[in-house]
Length: 340
Image (cartoon, rainbow, N blue to C red; front, side):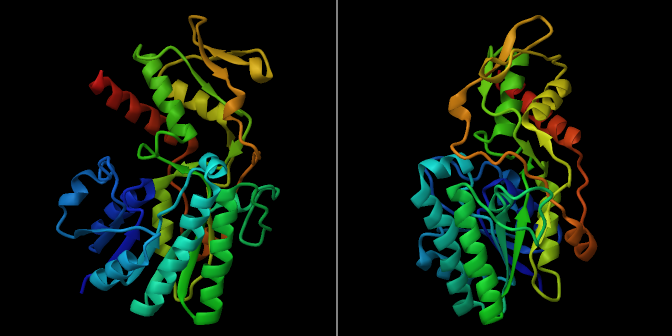
């Protein structure tokens, strides 16, 4: 019989890549979709027509919909990717972030134990749990989150991943993923803001854009690589937690420069601090700094050590930092060229 997987957050970046990957492996895939006034299926595209794809409407706030989805899908594996995933927004909506990212996992795990006690569960944790911990960060590093998002994810990790695994024998793994991007990334995330803005400037659709802290360092990888690690975790004999990362960090400034190069835009920098600007080769200012985009509590440097995943899972990233920036920039440029 085909394996069955239930993916919460299937309409997000990771969910769309994971659904495509599992369908390619012959899985029957069920996706939990939260109803919105906009079309939530945009990232799934043609996958919605696949005979192995099924959709259940519900969300992590509603135990009844979770129970129904579990009873209907009868999953061998659950991938909990649903979340309030914007770190910046978590400062403005801390209660909503805690409700979804912490209590939501609790509801899902509680219903899974009742309906499918032998199921294997993947929980999407985050490098934001490390916060101010000095890099490189691995599975033994201390957690020091500095955002409501990181705090909610850490509570979920401690109470429902480690707690249910140790006290109830549940097969549940936590993937502590560092920043992973793609052309499917939400447009409000800084990497997509950069690639969209530069593409519009290249096409003459926009004059300039603004960013916050250019010196924040992140370990950026490709989402299409990272979802493979999720699947490998649930294939192990025993559940464990894994850091998934490239092991190389880059600044926001470096991402801007890499995306600009991919589009043939030559940048030059001048000024400092809030007065710093970037100009194109014609001397036109196309990037400025806006202090409103700085986070109340900034995590300045995240860089993961994924030795455990590389050794035990046989996983390693394939797309480089420059390849990722080029992939995203060219995808947005092509999409916007058609719209124009």
